[in-house]
Image 1 (cartoon, rainbow, N blue to C red):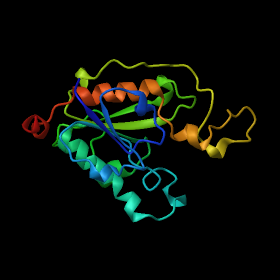
Image 2: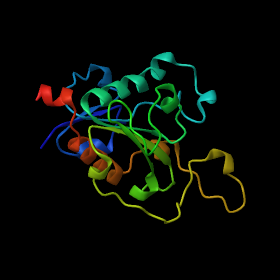
Image 3: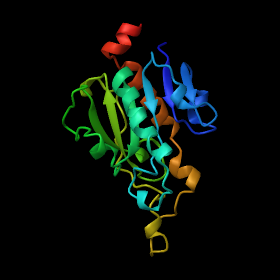
Image 4: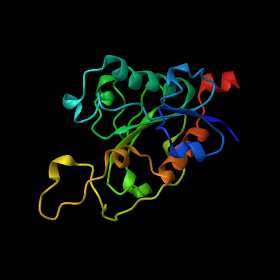
Length: 194
């Protein structure tokens, strides 16, 4: 089984129970990742997301997402960020349906397809795999049962809001799928290291 590094995992994490992973959480600085294997990257998004104006100004935390992106571009794998992340614009990442010079592509998904209670629109950036070679994933038209949108709380008929922990949690089915994606990737640098 090909090992995969998970960068910026929560503590505890759904990834802790999956085999063949090298998990980097808050106690194990992801920046110590030596390379040599594909990655699943969940870099902090507060500085990059739609609500970034309300995040504390933390340049060190902001620098983690571009660093994680560099790891994906070098070793292959997948980076996950909120759908409205400005990381795509900052690093000129490809829009869905296009490719970049690394062969990378972007894929929008909703995490409720993978079992999250809220829709949680997400953008994935994948390097080292052709889009047609992606593992199958669920496509659900089921309505979410919760929301991560704080501004609609209190409106009549509004869905209950997820807790802070639920908002940031990765559903087990999504984690498993992301690991399958990373395990399937190949890059020249990764092949040379093998």
